[in-house]
Length: 125
Image 1 (cartoon, rainbow, N blue to C red):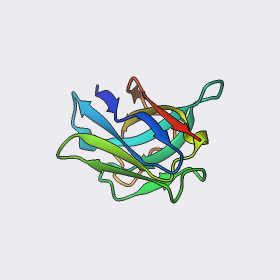
Image 2: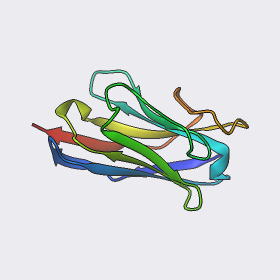
Image 3: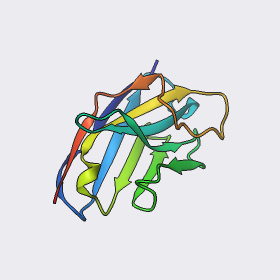
């Protein structure tokens, strides 16, 4: 199995930027499709962005499209989420998730099999 650990969260003003990282260990990172999900207080966990094994294909939720960018560095076993033009409604705990797949072009858009512990992002108005 793969172990995941998020970092990079914090408090930022509306309009600001943050870059989240997810460090992976334990298995061959490039065999996993990856995604970011988030969960705001009192709400269900929701999909934010997903990426294929190679990083060549991505998908975003409508709420973050054009503001967030997902990327990965398979040599560093790392997943990233660059978040720009942050809004108060982006406030949530952000999680990275992984799913082992043999399909190189599959973008993970559903909950994976492995999760990190989450990192808090708070956007003040």
